[in-house]
Length: 353
Image (cartoon, rainbow, N blue to C red; front, side, top):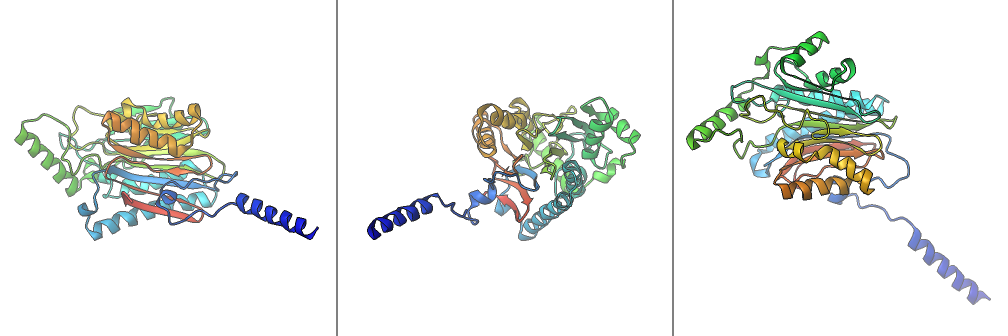
């Protein structure tokens, strides 16, 4: 009898050991970069940001520059996380976070915007709500201090989705948004980048808008947030491409290409070679794969960035989060300024780590 009881106890313990959940390894780079939430309840809140993707190598940045970018990314996360953890809305978190990045000369948006072929700044931005798919965007604006706020105003105060050029600027002024002299956006670094691109163009005899390899596709800032009400909002803002011509627009102001949000699937903000992101409808494609294939956000985003775009020859990355607070930040370039925060977790990264 005792032998039978001992045998039963042994198998019971064995069954319990096999079924007991194992603790995730917090030092895993995969866990940190793609922190999948396996709980049945969503994260209380979550926020993820990017500051552009491209040829970003450790050798390109001095220790001081590296520290400056990391500090800026952390400050941006501080702003958004403070709003979210205090019960604020995801749209406010996204707008205010991007405000900070638009004010920083480190990033190709707002104050740090690059110059076009004529030596002017032309900025684009878009914003989308996940609860009802309402969206707003502006393109080719030159005097709006915070283009992301203009995108929000288009969504909330006009019957349209996308306004461009002088009309968008007039609309922003009518909404009492902050208008500045175009000289506000001048920075020596961006001006020098344009001069280098023009010199290379003249030397090679090429009438092209593609920029110098070391400056190429580093632009754009973006933010996606999930608030305590379960609403997802995505926003993107950019200065576009150095030496661009003919009022070129990239993917950043295009809903479904550079920005997309749907509470049922995910929110996405993209950065990279905009022409490819437009033609492959990258932001929407991530959400569509989740909806139609029933796959998770990390798998969907990786398929788009690391398979479809690579086959097409497109370079860049994206940030995304879903209704559970799962976050993914894939990129196929050498680096991407990026980071996320949710209760008890924070990651800021630049290189392939």
